[in-house]
Structures are given as structure tokens and as C-alpha cells.
Image (spheres, rainbow, N blue to C red):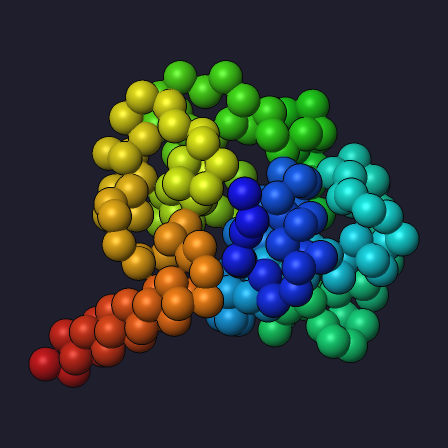
Length: 192
């Protein structure tokens, strides 16, 4: 499998082999381009001097130190302070509830509803983001518990609705077009 979520091969490789990097990319995927969000875990790993992110190490890091890693140009997110805090909260939740391993979040999950519920309980993940991540896990990582399509809602359908459907440069463009159309539709409804 070759991912096409980040802007560099190295970042995509990390996402493919490091469940925490994938989860952090999804968490960061808001108010910035999706490629930036999914590339930032690799940049963070480089700044931390590691090949793989460690939830326990990030959770235990002094908040100012993590913030500095987020803030150093190029910043990892448009809102480095709030996202550094949210990342540390996410890592702490993984340590507290999932043995410090993001993959435990979906390992052995029985139903799609349970998967969406587990993801949605994480800091920085609401219902929609949880459904998108469940669809990403199913479509690109083979995590397909019973009822995952129903639990993922529209994101479980075939099409180009979210990051879960990005498999190459062409599909990335189609997802971006879909998102633009949905925003325009929502704006028109607001005004009309």
C-alpha cells in the first residue's frame, strides 16, 4: 500500500507505518490543507529526533517544549498553540486508555459503531472526524469491523468525500472539489 495523504514520500511512509502519526494527521486536519495536516507528523518526528512518534514521550513532554516544536517555522499548524495542547491531550488519552499505542484504538474492535465511538471519545475528534477516520481505516488499512460503512455514514460510501478517499493526486483533487461544493452549498443555504 502506498498512501497519498501527505505532501512527501517520507511523510506518507510514516503515516503508513506509525498509527500515532496517522491519528495525529487526522487530528490536525482542520483549517489547513489536508496535505499539510498529514505531513506535520513527519515534521514533528524530525524535530523530536525520532523515526516513530511515541505517545508517552509526547504526553510527558513539557508543554512549552511541544509548543516550540509546533511553532518553529514552518509551523505544524495554522494554530500551533491550540494544536500542540490538543496533541498532548490526545497522547495522554492514548497513554491512559490504550496502553500508549494508537493501534490499540482499533485493534479487536467488533463493530463500526464501537470504532466510531472510540475515536470520537478522543480529544480533538468530534463525530464527523471520527466517521472520516473510521472510513480511512477501513478503506486504506483494512480495518473493517461489522457495520463500518453504516457507522462511517456518507464517508463509507464509494466516492470522493474525504481524506479516506484520497488514493492518488487525481482523487485528492476530486475530494477538494467535493469539499468546495459542500461549503458553497452550505453558504448558499445560510444566505438563502
